[in-house]
Image (cartoon, rainbow, N blue to C red; front, side, top):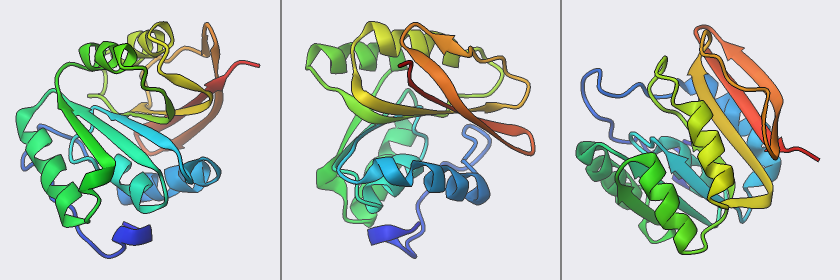
Amino acid sequence: MTGSAKGLKLHTLEGMGTRPTTDRVRENLFNILAPYIENSKVLDLFAGSGSLGIEALSRGAQSAVFSDSNEKCIDIIKRNLQHVKLFEKGQVFLGEAQLILKKLSQHGEKFDIIFLDPPYRKGIIPPILQFLEENDVLEDRFIISAESDIDDELPESTGGMVVSKVQIYGKSKLTFYKRNI
């Protein structure tokens, strides 16, 4: 952790149910996102421990919404937000990503930064990208970070968004999407 939560260690789910983003990948991810973070609204789908959204809050994001379908992950996210004293800047939702996106859209929520870090090799990212667009939850100047297995096929574009950068770290790949202008 850096920023206001520097030096604080987050709780994680024990076992192989989640795959935390490695420190190296997270450091590089936030170097790329640095220009976008200040006062941004963040959505951390498939949040796991909430480390990506919490890191963004720690670095100056205005607010973060965390979503995961695992109840134990939701409990850990809440504990982590309390631990780093950022609980008031976060909202935490239990449920499937598409249902949460629909709910957020119905409440007029829009996001500047979206983290997608679903289970690898399940083909989850392409339909979620489509769903993000269809449900109007993207600010005009958004950036999406999608973490996947190096062999996962991700679209170069989907409607109004296009790949702006791809970074490879061992077996992991970060794909960044921005508005297609």
